[in-house]
Amino acid sequence: MNLASMFDESAHRFPDKIVLRYGARHYSYAEIRALSLRAAAVLQDQGVGAGDRVALMCFNTPYFLVGVLAALRLGAVFVPVNHKLQAPEVEHILQHSRAGVCIVDGALAPVMRKVRGAVRWLATDSAIEGVPLFESLVEAAAPRPLPAPCEREAVAQILYTSGTTGQPKGCVHSHRNVYTTAMIAALGLEITRHERMLIAMPIWHASPLNNWMFGTLLMGGSLVFLREYSPRAMLETIAREKTTLLFAAPIALLAPIDAVPDFNAFDLRSMRAWIYGGGPLGKDMALRLMEAYGSDQFIQVYGMTEAGPLGTVLFPEDALRKAGSIGRSSLPGVRVRVVDPDGRDTASGRIGEIVLQSEAAMQGYLDAPEATAAAYDAEGWYHSGDLARVDDDGYFYVVDRLKDLIVTGGENVYSKEVEDALSPHPDIADVAVIGQPHAQWGETVVAVIVAKPGRAPSDEELKAFLADRLARYKIPRLYRRVEVLPRTPSGKLQKHILREQMTAGTVPA
Image 1 (cartoon, rainbow, N blue to C red):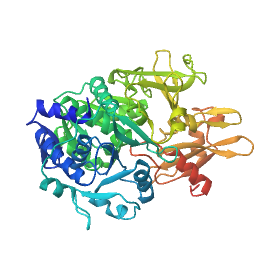
Image 2 (cartoon, rainbow, N blue to C red):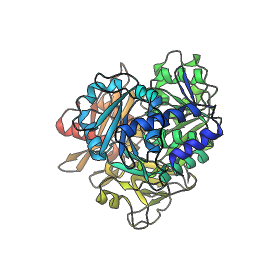
Image 3 (tube, rainbow, N blue to C red):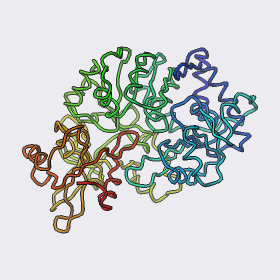
Image 4 (cartoon, helix red, strand yellow):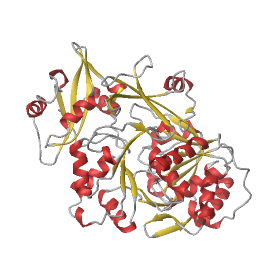
């Protein structure tokens, strides 16, 4: 089944049901279906046909969904674009994906106007001078005959990685891949037709898009779009719309506790569970969330764009007992192992690389056969680049990225272990640990910290704090202060940016 047919099946079952809530506007399944049929005619007029690429650089707004469905109805490929990117980065994605049309939010006009290339622009949500407004074209259009539905093996989307290691690569997913992702997410997290799924994280990111948007549409549930995340807006939307589920990075759940003075005034009792990913939570952080939100239903998910994103899950009953873990078992239909460099399963307590296998895994990286070949082994296991250990009960604990491993004086230092040791310091709001080249030791351990407002812990205070928490060789020798750490929209640290800044001497001591 292709994704347009999947949506139409839900629309056939629940035509009058609200599928999308956005501020004061509500859309039924039948209304979104009708809009997407007219939008398909608009894209046809722009020259879009089967196999063509339609980019969407949008906030979480209704016509993102309309545009995606319209492209899928034509057998075209949709390419979500990070709305936080600057013109050269957008230009790279549009050119690399060979997008012919890009639907862009009117608020992003300053970036759009700097992008070079022959792409045809359509504005959405607000007008851009000289650019046709997608909504107006759709309202004026009439549905017309569509091509035969594409096969499930046809390409549906190209998702660009978040760029934690440099230039993003385009992950190619078929209709079958995305449908499988949606089905497994719905089964594994028990999404039902009664769901009101809050999409508060950027919708162009793999997990909000494939797991939670398509998973909810598959089951006939309702979506609630928050145009752009902010701590207060998230709480207001939950209270107003009585949402039942959301997915967020841990930082997005923690931020409201400190940033919203009247946090306790918001009624959050409609939420049956809080799904988070992008990094596990330690026990102290988990307890803090449970107390603040009045719930123990926190679910950790682990995955990556290349894998659907699908992987493992840590259910609420293990949230405290196995705090810091990404779970013991994979989601249904996904196989996860931790292996040594020879591909053998690691023994309990030993560190290896996480590898995954499922029908949701990407077809490969766009126009990058060497990178694709390097990502998979001969048996079809995707190598994640995440290092993890497995405890005696079979639970996985991510300890580092393979590329973030620091080797100092012949000893391996896992940066996440150091970050976890520093994070509880009362003066630290955020921290990243990286390696810096050193003539004698190979590398030296560097902590880049964001201090809490009004706090300024000294190097010696931080070293003393770690003295009985870490082996001496793991304790950072150097400490750098920044106002904010570079992170992807999913909350993952972009350590390559910190390394570049360190090399350039732009990270202050």
